[in-house]
Image 1 (spheres, rainbow, N blue to C red):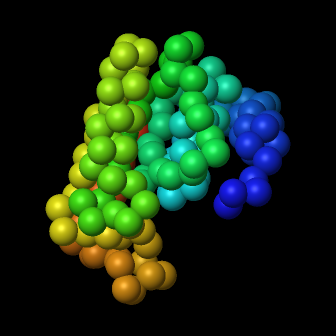
Image 2: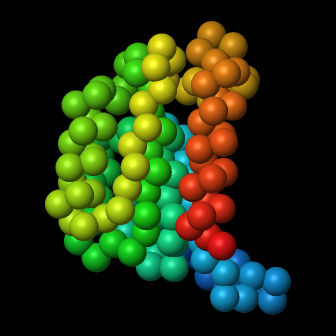
Amino acid sequence: MLELDTSCAGCDLSCAVDALERQLEVGGAKFGCIGFCMGGKLALYGASLVPEIAAVVDCYGVHPNISVDFSSWGARVLGIFAENCEFVSGADVKALSESLDAAGVESRMLTYVGVQHAFLNESRPDVFDADNAAEAWRDIDSFLEAELH
């Protein structure tokens, strides 16, 4: 995770959006980006590079070496976080929210009570929480439906 070439990851995301835009079925569509853990932070980073991304879902995103410039931001953000996350604290969520607010980015941060990092991951029975995951997926679906249609 710490050896990730973030500029390469940003380029990959930009190329993916370019490839989607060339598909006839996609023409004129808005794009969304969702990421989990490191991918959540990469989703935010990618949207700072790719103006076609209109909505970002950051699921407990963390990466100490990725900073995001929200100053020319065009996407709306939904943050999905876990109350008992060992990687992203309540203070981290608050700092992200304040950074987005300061840049005028419309965002909503949701912290699910009693769950741990990766609570959406069915393949991790040690932390998966079916009830909270179902609620989070409803929130994610509603957000993406509203922002991308």
